[in-house]
Image 1 (tube, helix red, strand yellow):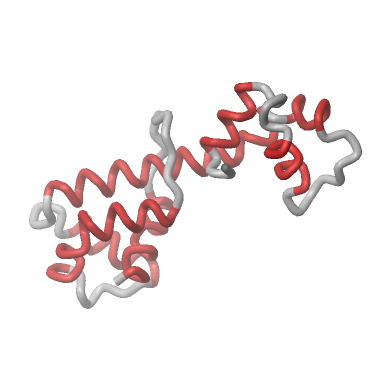
Image 2: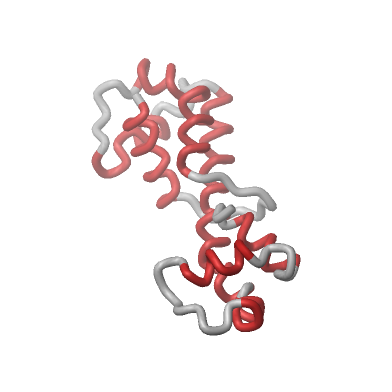
Length: 139
């Protein structure tokens, strides 16, 4: 069931446009939300749906009128929140660029070294950078 929910979540993420939420969720949190909201619907309407090509997501969309309101609502919210997480991850390096230059001089870029430095320097790092790190799910 977890694999089905994860595959469904991933497919939804790729098919949904980003929304303007101040909060984000990661894949693990999304799986928890959707396993509660959509587990019974997947078992009932999408048991034979494949993991490939967003089969579960397509099945739930095709059966949207039959699927519980909670599942439909949570699918939309989770997709938006994960899109926000992905956008925050893309934006964080630029937002934290000045802090990295100030607090992480001499730290070799790549393999998460700059991020580790910024996490260690959290009390000194700007609020904007700390917020970007939090929204990106790095802390």
